[in-house]
Image (cartoon, rainbow, N blue to C red; front, side):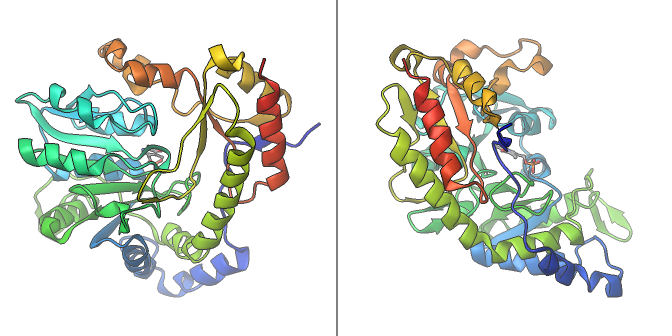
Length: 371
Ligand SMILES: *Cc1c(COP(=O)(O)O)cnc(C)c1O
């Protein structure tokens, strides 16, 4: 039996390092509610991400959901269907309507040229995703938002550590939401964050209140908040993992270069190319399989790899605008590029501890499917 290789494997610090980090919690008995670990991680991340403000949350989904609430958005939000369920659910769970915009075939982010045609008098914001760590066309999106008075939220769940034109990716838009879920490049077991500029200080106060039931002070509760605080054990994991993040990114880079060197000249395989002015984080390695030129379908490649105990994932299939939960409410034909790519994409295994020889083996199996 060949060993099992999944699409990802969580990064962990040395166990002694974590035990050492959490040991003072036994003295303080302070387990959650913005304790010392929370404060420490918050300040470390502000520096690492090069942003003006960070607040920590229990997960990336609540970062999105509470951001929409804190910005007091109404009506419609223009967004992408080529994403994880969370992005769309955050809009719908706030009682708003997602309006789906198509994506670019090259970097899979929202197609900024198609946004303006979707704006109505009910549009309040654009919520787009730096998918796979690829940066959205932030300049064009900002120009559209300014012209129509819209808010901009970035789902930066995939983009930890990414920089655009030398600036931390979390400093674009009104808010950027990160996920620190176990499967992400940087994890706090479960966790997330919102990043925002100094001009949005009130937003920061609102998020802080909303993540703690809307409690303003001991006697005033003036918002219908949730419980979305990051606990001390998760923050401690973040402190430990952050010490190792640069080593981790370097390893990922080597693995991505290996995939690239073995797969880039294969006719019928489209790889996501490095973007101009972007410092990458090597979070995912998606390939898009054009079955006409490659001679095999995405599902055939998936099955072949599964036969070798290798389990990549169809990120992102199905598109969120086709979810059963929405009972056919959205017309998928309005996002043809996203539909075409979702049927052909495969995200190959990529994580810190993946062996470079396994990258070679996985690449060879993929190439062997070509007819
Ligand atoms: C992981 C992810 C989220 C949600 O983050 P959680 O921390 O799991 O709640 C949101 N959007 C995208 C694109 C993601 O990949």
